[in-house]
Structure formats: structure tokens, C-alpha cells
Length: 70
Image (cartoon, rainbow, N blue to C red; front, side, top):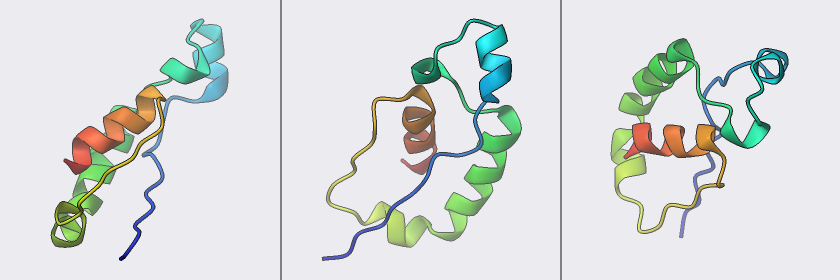
């Protein structure tokens, strides 16, 4: 069995989110962060796509990152 841990892509800065009254749970990825992560995910597609199980945290940025992976 092999485990692959992936950290979420670059998210909206905490201070900016706080000023916009966005809770940490709902802090989204930045467009640039999502784009950069998508390019990296292509390189690891064979390894990532063969997984039997995917687990993510309930944070929005984690969900958005998982959407890119899948």
C-alpha cells in the first residue's frame, strides 16, 4: 500500500480573507495557485489517478485542490 499526501494549492491570504470576512474554512484557492497546481498534477497523473481511496479535509481549499486532482 502506498500513501500520497498532497497539501492544498495556494489559497487566499489569511489577512485578506479576514478583511473580506471570509472564514478560514471557506478560504478559496487563488486562481494562480489552482493553475500552478493543475500543471503539477499533470506530471503525477498516473500515480494519483490509480488510487483506491481519496481523503480530504472539509476546508474549501482542500476540496478545490481535490477537484483538480480528480
